[in-house]
Amino acid sequence: MQNSMKRAGSVFRSDAVQRLLALGALVILIIFFSIASEHFLTWSNAKGIFLATSVVGILAMGVTFVIITAGIDLSIGTVMTFSAVMTGVFITNLGVPWPIGIFGGILAGTLMGTVNGTLVARFGLPPFIATLGMLNIARGLALVISELRPIYFPDQPGFNETFMGSVTGDLGFVDIPNLVFVFFGVAIVAGFILSRTVLGRYIFAIGSNEEATRLSGVRSMRYKASAYVISGTMAGIAGVVIAARLNSAQPAVGFGYELDAIAAAVIGGTSLAGGEGSIFGTVIGAFIISVLTNGLRLLGVPQEWQITITGIIVILAVYLDILRRRQNA
Image (cartoon, rainbow, N blue to C red):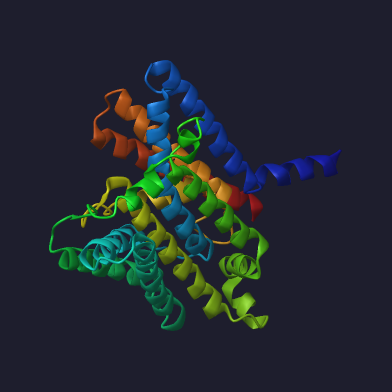
């Protein structure tokens, strides 16, 4: 009997509980807003939620890798903006085919992530300082390169149609934007990397005990830097996605997205102390952020209160993580 109680307590304290709580919170939010607003369950509103989640969710998946290493990446929002601008430069200013422009935009984000990883892993800069510096660098470069003006895509409509079009709609089924499939495809790949590869296992090991991981013969600097490279790549993908969604590269659009992305990861069970997290939990966290923002907007809640409520939820999620870690100690 006593052993059973111990096992039950162990299950209760596991990080899976926070993901389960997040999923339960998402269901409750959907039920509440469905009752509170007749417009919430309309398909047009649901599409808006999916599209908003796609951008924040891709950013959040990238930063999940970094947070699991006990680091942080504050630059993802402006790196996304820089990647969007570079996509616009390649496609519109240089006139290259849009598939090559997409590759160029993602590569821009990857390069920014590589710089972050090098500064943190090789030169030993605190992640907060390194990525805060990159936040301003990426933001400044986006403004300089774009000359403070949006970059549109008038000559290559295929770029917007590829993401915002609907293969399912063309086939006579439910009109689901292709971007939604891109989002879930990225989630599947990210989940596989984190849970089924050597890279993923070492990222968890670094977050749990970096010194022990290094002493065991693992080249921890390389794997730690890889987490930031992945985060930058995800920011690059998000930059391409938001440029396609808006059909333009807006040089100031990404500022503040990093907070929503980090919030989504934390709400989904990724521990700021490192060593714990999952892509599934992060996706749930991203949907919570989007559903909450969308529902509050439908109810006429001012934006400043929407931001305040999101902040309170993040604090509660972090506090629950602290309580759980104390119980595990």
